[in-house]
Image (cartoon, rainbow, N blue to C red; front, side, top):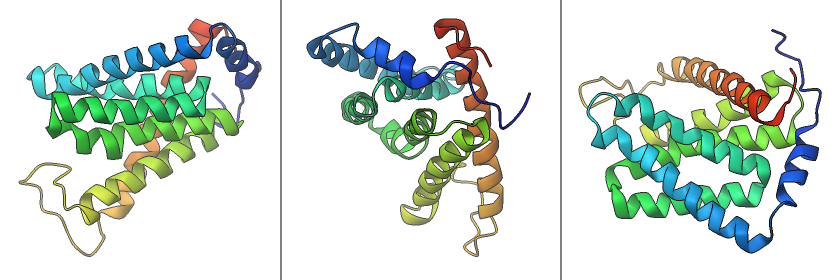
Length: 187
């Protein structure tokens, strides 16, 4: 596995072909359906006691795919999912807005604009890290739980950065695996 390897079939050509399959009104309906599905995946963390914690992170994938198809559709999906989460389960709004959703937007934009795996993962890392820092230091949201001691001297930042990079790289590889199976993109 080469970190600087790029897919041989350009994603931009594949996504342009997919966008032309349906008219714009059909895409609006599809964005709303994907947003509803993403909101349901995100709410699984609070609705299903143990298994929901493993289902909830999967809400990143629809955001990545919609951002791959169109940056605008990805932004619409992200925004509509936030609105649906406010109505369905407000406790998940902050988590989705600043972690799961932002990671999806960052990786989707990385796949659209960048050519190498490492840089795609780095773009997702930047989005996720900035969202987690906003939650921890801007909103004082207990990201790791209320019992976890949060140091104010930024000793937590290198660990957050490394976690963001590893998590983003994992999602990059998982997305490429899905794209290989679905769109026949060879790696």
